[in-house]
Image (cartoon, rainbow, N blue to C red; front, side, top):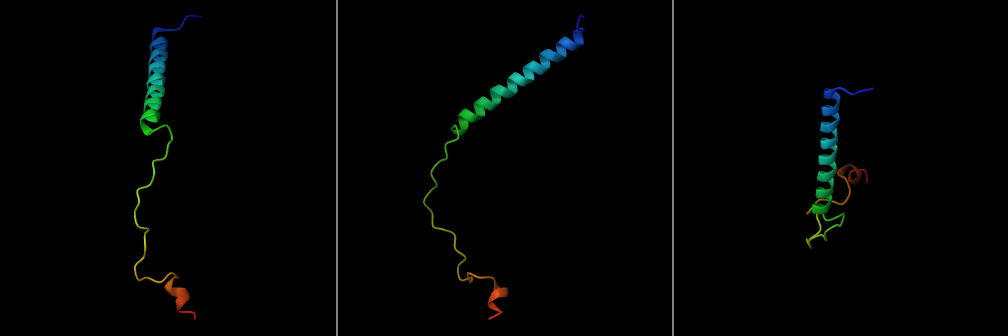
Amino acid sequence: MAMSVAMVVLLILLGLAALAAITGTVVLVLRDGRGEIPPEPPVQPWTAGTLPSRPYATLRRI
């Protein structure tokens, strides 16, 4: 049961594509910091200025 030349070439190309995908994944994980979350910069919390803390619709029902 011999494989044709086209099948061998296809299998080689698929193997190279899989190897490139695995290598790329490893490189991206290592560059990303291996899952470590960087500390958040100290900034003021977001505020809505002078807007009420409740929706306007609930303020009208009083």
